Image 1 (cartoon, rainbow, N blue to C red):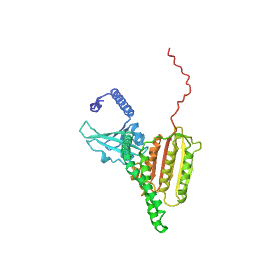
Image 2: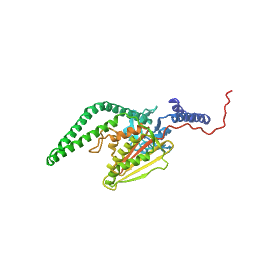
Image 3: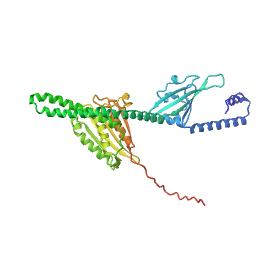
Image 4: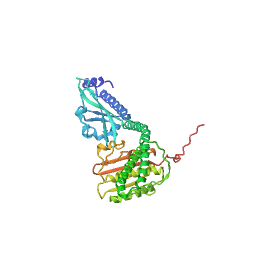
Length: 389
């Protein structure tokens, strides 16, 4: 519809007969319906607002992005979307582009353009149009690309680290063994203080060797050795390994495991390492006796889920954003490689890991593992035959 059509209509509104007015009104309705159909077909969100920022039109995509429904019509947009400040985004005569993150109804990264709708009569604005794009997928792709580049750089570094540190550590360990043999020939009084220094040196070498091994495991590409695996058995074996430490800290472990949990094609050794790292993180976050770790499992036709929860100190919002970055850790003796190894193993099995946490309320880690490729399934016959002759 041309912009001057409404102006001409209004100018001669008092001179047209009812029949012509009805025809013009029908035309307006058809034009409005056509435009609404176009906007509803878009994947981008479209919101039209009046001069004060009240919503006059919103399409289905925008409703989905922000968790809104038709009752938003006539209401202020910024009152229904907390965090938006109308004065900060509504600039008369200017188009404003901003990024924002929404958490309801699901976590999304959005970009919007807010442009004024200029009045053809007397200048000024008589409304606004907001175009909203979902950038969640592209943002995640960029993060995965950045992570891949980071791991590639670490992989190149690993070869040098393995040679420059690993070989001297082996040499030191051999020399400490030789020193230990010579110490046995000394009188007991002279031997004891030297043995203490020797034991300290051995512990430090072992600690350096552990850091090097974790570093290499975190970045070195590995191929899982897949075989039918009962994940509950792997979990029980890991808990048995950690039983002395859990008992000494008076930590209670509650299990809520699904019956008939299906076997999966997994590398049992790698998943034992996953459970070991996650359970150690969980009990190290607990303060004093009375701590609780709860482990639940369930499944559906598509995936199996394992959740590990604790009632510990939780994770601050600032730390949540860097959990999987190497050498980022809140522990004095930690390397910051545990979660990096965990996520790498899970992703190599086609799964994903999610972390929910609240300071002073605890942390829950969800592991999603696909059950495998789906076979084809014949649907019930519709008794419809097409004759191609």
